Length: 453
Image: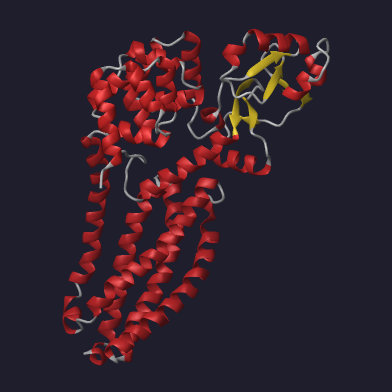
């Protein structure tokens, strides 16, 4: 069976080697965005520059906009700053800020120096915002007119600059005072069906719904959950219009945050990895997480080492110890996931310690009791010894309660200490559930040793 992505990449390599720009446009245009990204990921880093220089600045910008930020940065950094600046001028403001904002300061400054001064200033303003705020997600391509304009003057401006505005995502025009402070929103239908001599201020919707440029993602997600707008104006602290926040940008940022949390929980430090990244970056990100885990696992294994005499006499316990630690870990990870999700959405704060403890304790007691009965019954059926069932079942039940409570609370504790809950919670939970599980089963077995042997 042929490997289609590799064949596609090989075809792309042949086109790049032939330096056939026309064929390159035709080839990329025939692929879906996913296939384009996959083909480019198979290219060597030395081929990135050839790809970018053979495309027109507009086409290169369009390609970067549909790629993951990390992949887009690699491509943009592959060309000289002069060419990169020309390409960056063509990228939509919000995506451009994400790409340039993730580069090192030296690379960003070099590209900004070769961009259009107004566009470069726009980038500097956007990357000054935190990425997961309205300012970091908004676009700056919008139509705004002062409140002294008439409907006819606005329509004439749109006609005169139709080519420039064609790429704008225009749903509304915005009316401001001479200081740039938002006065109202003008719907396109009202603009088209109103007499041209009428002042725009009479037609606009005053006191328009808006967001502040420093509002965090969790508030923005809640805002768009309550309002069915495609986009809203973003204002600074003085009420000045600074951009437009689109629903799609908030939804995409929420999905990216969830994906980043998943990657960090899985041990990918940095929150994002692609296999075409440099090898040194990839193994260092993974190894730092794995090194922490091996230290914590040695600590957990020390509990077994201290109770080898009990394990030697009741070898059947070796079968149940990994079951107890693994099942408790699964229960704890469920609690970790809920806490991290609530922290991300702003539904929980570190101070909610007691509320989370009460909620998780109730779940832990019920699930722990059910799992204890199930494992205890399995142990009894296997060896015909009810005491083995009591030891294994009780250890699993208690460890489940501990794991669920600890799993729910540790993200809150880490958040309060300014540490990354998504990155550290997993290793800590694994260590605690292993240590407690091993300790409980071996301790209970020690008390009932004469009935188990």
